[in-house]
Structures are given as structure tokens and as C-alpha cells.
Length: 214
Ligand SMILES: [Zn+2]
Image (cartoon, rainbow, N blue to C red):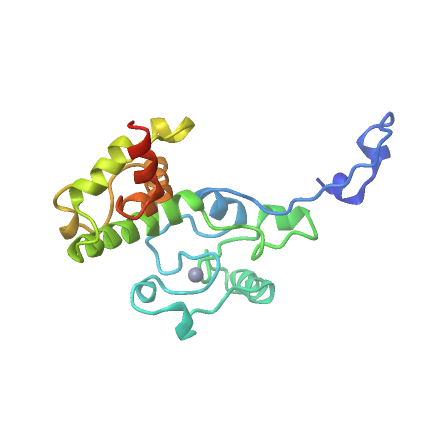
């Protein structure tokens, strides 16, 4: 990767005729993989579990980001954590346990800027099923649509391609007492994509299905 970054075509291959530039922009990985490469603790039940800020786990559930309680990790802050580990001979400091393997070898690589959130765990298995469960519960209580309506949409929606094999689970009658929606990450993603159609009285899906029965 250093050769690509330096655009040293001679080093890549003596017969290489084209210029080639490249660099590692970011590492897309699940949280466990990202923490492993970035040098953060691979434990998500400890005190510091976030690679973006130094929030303590117990505060994440009680304080909002806009409160300013969470300190965003910068390169300087991260370097100070690495320095503290070395000077104090501790195994970790604020959730950091060692230098990122890519930062060690690529001078331009930023450990605090180059590990985006884990879309599967943070969104599809995290906040999205919780929000959908809450929205469905509230909208049903406001009589915007019924549970039968939403389940009929899920059952009859003309899903295509991979969404077809990942058709969402039906919403159980006990949804209003639950805090999440069942299914795996792909099934929850499918449900998220059709969530605006759950209210069949308002959706274009109803007009389509009435014109062309499924
Ligand atoms: Zn955070």
C-alpha cells in the first residue's frame, strides 16, 4: 500500500507502464473487526466501547450527544492515550490498547477518521428495529393504520431480488410491549425500506396493488 501511495511504478513492477495511485481511504468492517485493526479493546461491555468518543458505557444510556458530555477522539487525544499506555505500562487507556496496525505502516492513515460506523450492527441490528417498533406502536395507537394493515403490507409487498428472500417478519400482536422488531439485519433492512408503505391508506403501494392485484 505504501508503494501505491508513493506512485512508484518501478517498484510495483519493472514492466508496469501506467501510473497508478492508491491509498487506504477507510476500513469498512464490523465493530469487532474495526476495533481489532484500529487497536481498540474488542470488548463491548467494558467502560469504554466507542471508537469515536470517550463516552463511558453507563453514560451512553443516560446522556445525549448534544449535551457535550462525550469527548470526540482526535488524533492528538488518541496519541496521548497511546503515550499513557507506554509510560504507565497499562494494558489499555480509554479503550485504546495499542497503535493501529495501518497507522504504524501508512503515515497518512488516520485511526480516528478512517473507521466508519458498522451499518449492520449499529443500524440494522441496533437503532433501526427499536425505532421501527416504537413508530409502529405509536402509529397504531393513533389509529393511523392497524396491525393487520402493516402485516398485510409485509406479506404482499412485491419485494425484488435479495429483499425477496429477506422478507421481514410479521409484526406480532405483542409489539406494543416489545422494544424491537424481530429478524436478522437483512430482514430489518427490508422492513425499513418499506416502512413508509405500512400505512396502506397513504402509500402509493396501495394504489399500485389495487390496480394490479398481487
Ligand atoms: Zn461515541
